[in-house]
Length: 354
Ligand SMILES: Cc1cc2nc3c(=O)[nH]c(=O)nc-3n(C[C@H](O)[C@H](O)[C@H](O)COP(=O)(O)OP(=O)(O)OC[C@H]3O[C@@H](n4cnc5c(N)ncnc54)[C@H](O)[C@@H]3O)c2cc1C
Ligand code: SF4
Image 1 (cartoon, protein in one colour):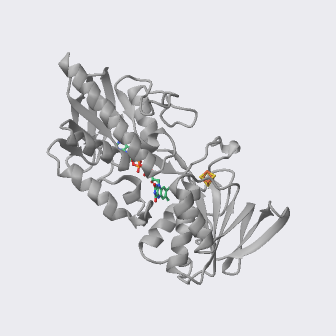
Image 2 (cartoon, rainbow, N blue to C red):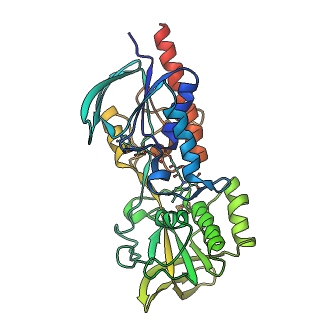
């Protein structure tokens, strides 16, 4: 007898949205999250404000979490992951293992599966682009910057002083053939511009610069973030390549080339923010293996190259949503989750009716 349950792996924005929509149309869900809490990367990495609209990230995510945890149709398994799977569309039997307190193992039956295991930030200590992240306290990543902004300040990690000059370096770990990440991470131009605005808001005396190869933004990111960053907040965008960061006194010296002017540059900064890209999370890689789902060259889950079906995978009955399928902002992750939810619900109902 086919199962009418949908298994969702990953309790970030995409997994939560799929779960609350499925429950909303009366479909049973088992939601498996490896961490001890829901909310995904925005909660785990302590994001400050989410676009559109610069809303408080924790408040926004808590609303989604409550919709899911309040539903009697969603069985939430925290601190758990999937270690094995067998069967086919309509009849998957999946081994869910809980670690930590109350550890144990259990077989969950599901008619369809949604993989929503997300992304991880590029590790800026890895290979080519050595910007001194592990050497200098004042070289930080976008995720570190979110944490500071959440705490309501943007001070130099090395000595707590308000910075005079802050810069962002774009495309760290993305669009880089040498490490095999030729892809664009899609969100980091927008997030850097968002943070540049927030830095100017908490510290109006700080000058902010963005060093970019080219700025890639679309839709609301351009109108609500990019243009106000320049026109209202006077963030300075410089087309250039940074090749080296060295310490000079208690400041950092940025060396590289201003490619518009075609001349070398050497500028002092107090904080450097590395716009690290998005890579497939370990969970995404593992789930692809366990369910036998095809991955693309970058280990994200491969979706059929079909604009009308962005959530199908190479295995019938297994769908993907959010950043598990490649770099995505929240709009895209949430839209995919809705499509995956309705396809999964349609499938389990169809098979149950046979
Ligand atoms: C610094 C930064 C700031 C950002 N700010 C914004 C913004 O303001 N606006 C915007 O639109 N986008 C923003 N983004 C993008 C946003 O974070 C992503 O679009 C979103 O997190 C994707 O959601 P997801 O659910 O697909 O993945 P994730 O948020 O990564 O969630 C995946 C979940 O799956 C779980 N998981 C992983 N492996 C397993 C496993 N094996 N078993 C069980 N569970 C597992 C994880 O623990 C996690 O809870 C930002 C990105 C960055 C890098
Ligand atoms: S979004 Fe911008 S910073 Fe991120 S990889 Fe693409 S071009 Fe580079």
